[in-house]
Image (tube, rainbow, N blue to C red):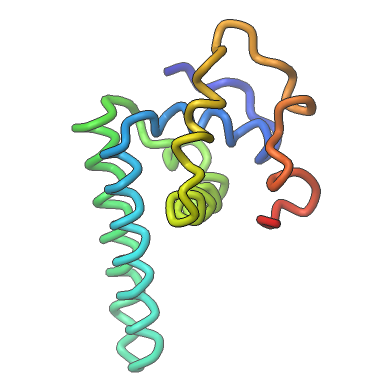
Length: 132
């Protein structure tokens, strides 16, 4: 998958979604993000600070495995680490709310002639970038 010119998170989101087409990829991301966050937060809560980076390693291990061995593409983290981190949390929220499959269908249905980012940015990503 070619990495398009990305100037904003709104440009990044469709690229990210297309890189997570397979349900198993999304499931592994959700597990990694959840377990990694739990380990990092437990480290902060208990004063065992070495667990914080361990949480990140766990999260990225699940994600990278899913890209290399399930999806067959390159993790978006390599080119856009901050956008990717933000998108992981948005995707987790959409998985938990049951809306991520529709998001994938939306961004993969008509890849031949996508609209400009300003016309296709999801309403919950426009503006302040906070889910509404």
